[in-house]
Amino acid sequence: MQRVTAGPPWALHDIAAIRRIESAAALGLPPHALMQRAGLAVARLALALAPHEPGVWLACGPGNNGGDGLEAAWHLKAWGRSPVVTWLGDEQSVPADARASLERARHAGVVFTDTPPPRCGLAIDALFGLGARRPLAGRAAQCRDALATLAAAGTPVLAVDLPSGLDADTGTGEQPVRADHTLSLLALKPGLFTAQGRDAAGQVWFDDLGVTASEPASAMLSARPEPVLRPHASHKGSWGDVAVVGGAAGLRGAALLAARAALHAGAGRVFVAPLQASGEPTLDPFQPDLMFRDPEALDLPRLHIVCGCGGGDAVRAVLPRIISSARSLVLDADALNAIAADASLGKLLRARSGRADRPSVITPHPLEAARLLQLTAGEVQQDRLSAARKLVEAFGCVVVLKGSGSVIAAPGEVPRINPTGNARLAIAGTGDVLAGMVATRMARGQAPFAAACDAVHAHGELADHWPAGETLTAAALARSIAPD
Ligand SMILES: NC(=O)C1=CN([C@@H]2O[C@H](COP(=O)(O)OP(=O)(O)OC[C@H]3O[C@@H](n4cnc5c(N)ncnc54)[C@H](O)[C@@H]3O)[C@@H](O)[C@H]2O)[C@@H](O)CC1
Ligand SMILES: [K+]
Image 1 (tube, rainbow, N blue to C red):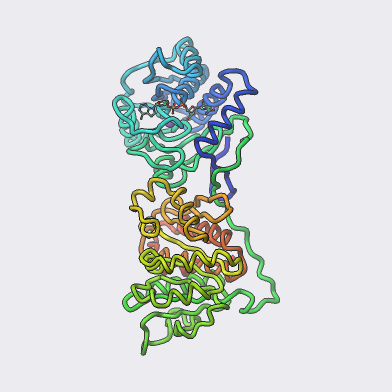
Image 2: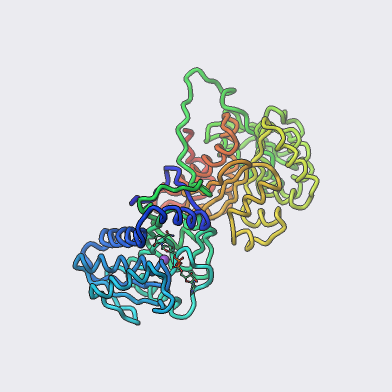
């Protein structure tokens, strides 16, 4: 069993792949073996989480997720604990494996009750796992509410395989169980790490039940970036030139944030090309290293461009030239809104996909993604991985779909879900900082997909390591970037 932490590139499998892995593994094992391993793993983790509390309540559903819970109860009883089970199954329709575990638990003298105990040392959610495809209702919803009441009183909640009611593929669900810990069995699921998954699952643990996955990963958790060695014999030209085009009147800050982020991330030179800026000062007094230019004067084929941050409507006019000519391109915010409103810009972006030397990355949040796909933001959030894939199909570029568990997708690549970051990033300007970080990585010569994955990971880690009690603002975030 392993604790899932941000760092290694964990493989994720969708429901269809897990069902195939399960069938292949079962062929070589005696009946009930996988559930026995699952129940043992759950019981071990339960013991580790509440070593001094004998009372454990297990809410067990009608299928094999409930069977895992019953099997765990049997172990806990054998180890001298006091498990109490609420079982929602039906004697007539219980699956064979779950029946075997039910009988073991009954014969061992595990207590069964219809009503949850008022208190216990640990509560285990074994209501539904992979089979949950509809909202919890009736007694299952009552158990979910009882788990919430216990959690509010300080009882840790451990979910078996998935928080019940959470969709393993998408991380969506209507009021899923909220767990402090989730033990994912056989394979890790994408839904634990995106959309509502992170809030519902708490700390994720993984036990492969002794089975090597016989299926390719459906997605991966992106790994911590490798540090980049900066050779002593390098100069500012070695680290690339980033130019930020945006910051229309009243929105200057967004462009400055992206530019400062690019500078702190280690670009060799950073230019700012504000839109509608005639007669304004051409200096950022807090960051005098930034060089100001007229957007029309930029040598685009040499430059790694960030476009859109605070672009307003004015960005529309400069986009055709930028999309056609920029050396590399990160498109954010108003640039994406302009593309959503004008199919000819989308065609220009798509045309870049034929040129490996002209990479492009788009960084929409869910509403911008929805505009690009002509969906609602709710529809995008309903299946974030598939929304990111659709954007890749539409524009042929690297896509960063921001939000809890940002998804990074690209042509020919297994999609990544980013495991870092927290709600402190849910403020204005942090997306501009991210755009500057992605562009800098491309300016330094990284391939666009890796640049996007690494920048998103590093951006999230800044928030994860933010000092307690200090406010995270986008400007402070940009300043805190340390080039690696
Ligand atoms: N796949 C495997 O190899 C293994 C699976 N195991 C466990 O088995 C689970 C999957 O078991 P099942 O396929 O039996 O599915 P579940 O136990 O998740 O659900 C059982 C059934 O409940 C019904 N159901 C779903 N949502 C409901 C709702 N909201 N209200 C009422 N009924 C609902 C569905 O018809 C579903 O088939 C996994 O998540 C895991 O916990 C483990 O035993 C280890 C091995
Ligand atoms: K569960």
